[in-house]
Length: 435
Image 1 (tube, helix red, strand yellow):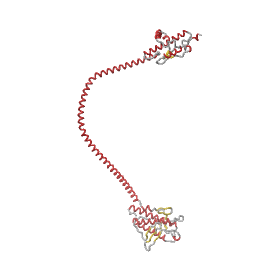
Image 2 (cartoon, helix red, strand yellow):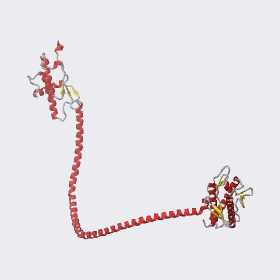
Image 3 (cartoon, helix red, strand yellow):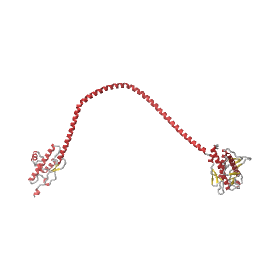
């Protein structure tokens, strides 16, 4: 069939060497007489009758880098292998046209800066770039021209500047000569100055040593002064503390602190020892004896403070075995301590000692009245009894209940506390010598 005998082929398309856009092959342009004449004059690398038609197409692709071969149908792969002579002539003509175009583009590329072929838009862009380069070159030319004019002006003014510089050079030479003369004079005096500097340095070193020694002595004296100052402050503080302690001790009465008289229910107490005894509260006799020892010591101390001596009796404080010694007639010791039992209750010496004690307290009251006529005791003492206007109790234990004897001992300690208060108050206000 005619359709099967026809060889299908595509025209080779070129690529723009600037933007890489595909270019269609203008077959009409390649058939012009000028292009055909150029093709006949050029030596075609593909005009060899011995070459295999199958390799001609490969040669076209290798010798023309600007064009790319599209995929060709199987009927066009064997050039010259067709049975139709017209078709072979057409293929041969196309091959020659491609070779001519390739040589033509190579010739243009060798004579131009830009490689060919180009699309329709790229030449305009190339021309615009050339226009920009021309404008830049013109601006550079103007700038160079301006610089050349300035250089010419500078060359013209260099002659006058050279004359001025010569005069300045001559002036500098004269100044140099003067400076050299001065330098000679300075060098001449240099040795003398060095000797003076050496002497001054020795003097400075000596002064530095003296200054260092001075500061060492100063620091030592300063340290000693600070130590003495601290010691003085410490002594002043100690003196102030001692003065405060002395004033506090002067205001403190030793007797008032040594003998604390108070009460514990129905019992009168002295320094915590109860002086009394009840059937319901049988106080131990050792506590009663200790209380009588404290009471004896207190009255004896008060008498010595006011320099008073009792008549007929002498108090002998001896702890829990204190007693009263009679001083008129036959000397006898009256014990202010007991141990209980039947024999003790039939012994009258303990009762006689308590009667002698309240007699001494009554004598001390009269001694106070000689100094202060308004002084009085809260409970009146009469022979062996003590009490107020409502009730009075005997200090004797025999033929007296324990409750009454305990109340009498409480009244006794109360009177003793009033006497102690008067002595301590008189001691503070009148300055009586302390015991």
